[in-house]
Image (cartoon, rainbow, N blue to C red; front, side, top):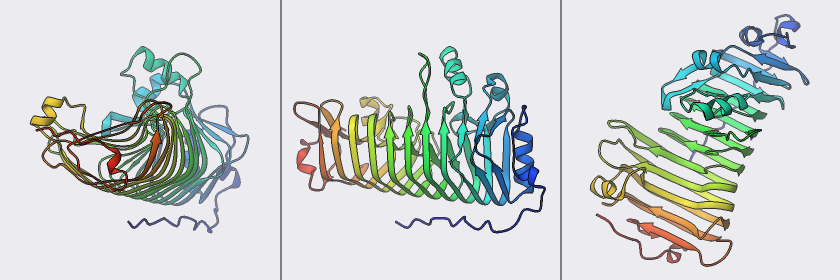
Length: 391
C-alpha cells in the first residue's frame, strides 16, 4: 500500500499584516470574527500560550492556501446550545453539524494548544433530548495537504474530527479526551471519521472517548493508522458500510498498526449491512497489525450482518464484499470469554480472511472464538471451531 505523507512545512513567507492582527489575544467577547480575518490576511496566525479565544460563531475557513495556525493557547467553542443548533454548518453525511470547516491547500495547525468543545452542555442537552444537534469540533473539507500536529482536543459535543473529501491529510501527536462531570454520559465522541478521502495518516496519538477511536467511512482509501492509545472506545472500525440502497461504499488499502486498545467495546472491527433494500460495496486490503488489547469485549470482529436479523441476512446477504483482510499479532486480555467473532453473510461474501499470531485470552477460563460463513487462513485458523454455514 502506498501512503503519501503531505509535506506541509513550507511556511517561509512573511506576513505583511500588522503584528496585532496576526497574534491574537482574547477580546472578552466573540473572537471568531478576528480569527477568521487573521487567517485570511496572515500567512501565520498565532494564539499565544495562556490565551483563550472564545469562539461564539461558526468558523468558515474554506479556500485557504499556504496558511499556518500556531495554536499555543486555546480555542474554546461557546456552550450556546441554541445558537449552535441553528447555526452550525450542516453536513448531510449521517446528518452531522460542525463548528469549524477548514478547507483549501497547504495548511498547518500546530503549537501544542487546545481545542475545547465545551461538551458538557451537549451531554446534558442530549440526555434531555436525543435529537439535539451536536457539533463536530473540526471538519477538514475539500482540502489537500493539511497537517494537524501536537494539538489537544477536549470535550467534543460529538465527533472530534471529520475528514470529508480530503487528500494528503496528516494528524500527528493528537491528544483527545472527552469526559462528563455528571451522570449524563458522553455519546458518539468518535476520534476520527474518514469519509470520501484519500491518503490519510493518523499517528502518535492518545484517545480517551466513548465511541470509535478511528472509523473508516464510505470511500476512505489509502489510510495509515499507527501508534495509537485508545481507551474507552468502540474500536478501530471499518464501516458501517452498505446501509443505503443504490449507494456503493468502498474502503480499500487501510493499515492500522501498533494500537493499544483498553476498556473498549471492540478492538479491530469491520461492519457491513445486509437485508432487503440496502446498498453495496467493497472492503479490500485491510490490515490490523500489532494490536494489544486490555479489557476489550470483542478483540477482533467481522460483522457482515450488522443490524440485520439472522433470517434477513440469510435471505438477503450483504452486498458489501469483504476480502484480503489481515489480523496479525493481536495479543492481550479480553473482558470476557469471547476473543474473536468473524461472522459473514452466506453466498461467499467474504474471502481471503487471515488470522496470524493471535494470542488473546479471557480473564479466566477458556477463550471463545466464533465464525460463520468464512474460510479462515493463517497460523491461528486452527483456534477457531468449524465455522457455521447458513443459507
